[in-house]
Length: 466
Ligand SMILES: [Zn+2]
Image (cartoon, rainbow, N blue to C red; front, side):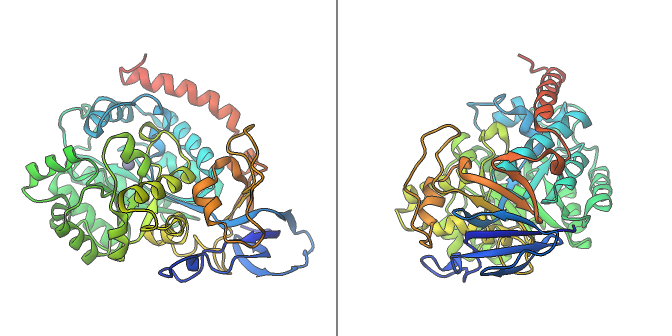
């Protein structure tokens, strides 16, 4: 990516401090400075950088600059289904709505769903995203993401088990045919720009033991990461014990799913023995607090996971189980839940901010995002922390004093309306709160119309049209 951008005069919150430091340590040195991005990466952070010839300049005085946010767990393919699966617990939510709808996707509806997701994620400051797609059409996620320049880790979900609610013809016939799709996607997209292919068993109940073992071997052979759901809801946890005769995490360990390249979404209900295994294997946890509340799953024990040295990322999960794609919502929700479950201060607000940025990047195994430092990707979110809580809403005039650690405003107060600009690899994808169609590769307004038509069509194909 060529070109140079100079961001002038923002208060930088670099998130490059010691990860285990208490207090504001992980924020790094919060200060007003200029930041230069060239050829996609940060090349200078200093006072009073002089604009170069042909360099774009962004006046960011009065704004706070953070590294692009990390969204650890989302499903692009479900975005068209927002509002179509409310008020259900996990297994009913999957069987009655989500699986039939996903099975009814075609390439065109999958593309619209991916583009709608990307537009919303970027508007919310997410520049690194891990995505679990459906059994088919996962290529549409990569194709939609490529022009934006975001870091996207994605994979087709692996399903080869029939069962209640699984639509006929949706699962792969066998492990070999499922892995053929994986290998086609890997060859087509892994390592292309900022795209990475991730092996993604849907969850242990949707896969045969052969498929899980072969998928883990495939991941090891090609040095790929593994992304799956685990220990989300008590009903699901019981089903796993019935099928495998051991706890959820023990089943995953037995089937070779665990290792430092494994990221597990949810992990709400885990026994001590399971946490010991998670620690032993160095897995990452993808925490989706809004989804865990909406589906009645529970509150994940983040304080214990962090004490065990596990990396955490935040995730919005799918639009039908949240229904927002705002990682700032998850930031606040995560902090609120831990304050309720463990007591105020047990998981201080700064820990939530680490999960949103540097820690989230670590959880996804991506080492050049999540911090504002020379050499990192030029992904920057610029926030007006004095801005109102919603478009047109009342403006707050209590922004923190210049140079003061902005933790409180960021974690407890800010909403997406505070996001003024979003820079991905040195390109402004969101300017003054609006998406730039030239950078995205699609027009958000035309996309909204196309999305509505695709949603009607896919609902009809699924037999769920209202
Ligand atoms: Zn999920």
